[in-house]
Length: 232
Image (tube, rainbow, N blue to C red):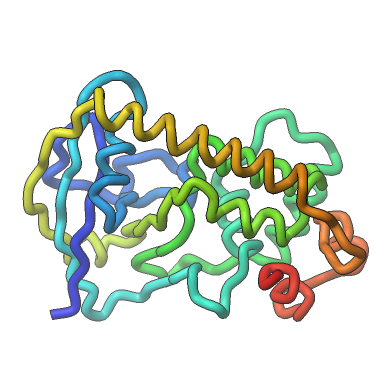
């Protein structure tokens, strides 16, 4: 059987998750956000100094339509478009809004028939990296590299009722806050520090693309310059 073992970090035991049990303003809208890494689930279960739970599930992938944003046919701006569709940064300027609209128009992906989404998780610091790109302070290449910092990991999101029908609850284990709250903070701080170092010392060449370059040059999703920037 084609299955995945998934974990969901939460303050509660969740035996019967639902499609609209969370917030629409999550990374990819309504859905159930999981990871294949139990250590990450334990960290996500402890956003404050209290114990949580790593809920364990088995997902039968048979017949599910999967959007895997880590595959070569997608790029970091496809991820940005999904993120900006559901999460709007605070304090946006007119230029920020223009950049957001351009990304949504040219890099969005239709989620209508998608059952499962696999992609980056925009934790607090990672969402700030996305904001920096929107504000024209980092390039596509720097954004792409930033998403690897701190080893945040990839999330697996159940995005349709069909996916929930094929999800089986297995068990829940306690996530000890003394261990995992500390680990969560350390991972976030490490990502921020690595980001500061990477953007401080990395040089920008004439081939690098800022968001304003993308808008002015009318760069689209299939433009080879996007892939060249990400590959650098």
